[in-house]
Length: 320
Image 1 (cartoon, one colour):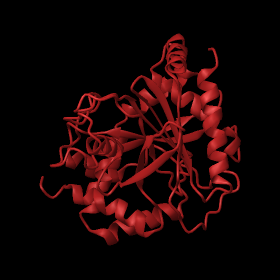
Image 2 (tube, rainbow, N blue to C red):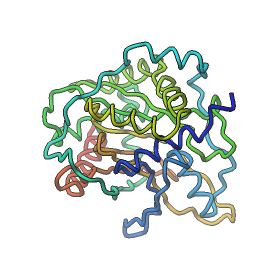
Image 3 (tube, helix red, strand yellow):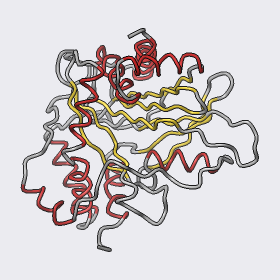
């Protein structure tokens, strides 16, 4: 139906921005000294995949198309409407789960941090995941879940992870880099093994929670920005804190159009005030890249992001 458009998606992120958040993806080139100059792509216009593809196209890479999902079949608008009568699939935290968190923080752009590992270290991480008999993204999330523990008020409480889901294929906007993503929450308990994390994420994907969220965006978005804002404010009154966000883009290694040696690029998801930790992982030109940001609503956010990023790297590198 033509009433369900990309404009309905844009309204949500536009209202989040008006309420003081910075919904966006940061992309940047990794220089020889490890420094990165970030360029930000708003979620009103791009999702994470769209932002990565856009920055690479702008810099001479051959990326003729965006990846489509192979795991998710579309749900109808009527199915989406019926979900409003059902209880939520995931109950989030009513109180902030992070230490030293200022719930009245006015909002500020997050400057993420990233590291690019050597090919040897990248192979070591891949071997560790293989020994655990899990996908690389499951292994990355398992290590990340352990790495964020020192940032949490209760390290033994279950964590609620927001995991974006690419809906390209079932959803097709005119511009392939536009925001085609939804998301799902994954509840991970301390002590989970990599196999436990993988079973949990795959089981959650089968609940179609990402389609529930997608149709919430569409149906409420039909009624304009005011309706979206009221929905966001109602959610905020209930707390609805997400522990962290994790994005894995897998292996993404396009060639340059002119045949020259490719530069190293990376991307990081936004850390929102209600999801104050965000991290991304991917392999680019055969090298593992890890990126992480902590929202400034958390005290000493940049220092804590750097410490968490290093813990994540170490956990991935440990022999399993």
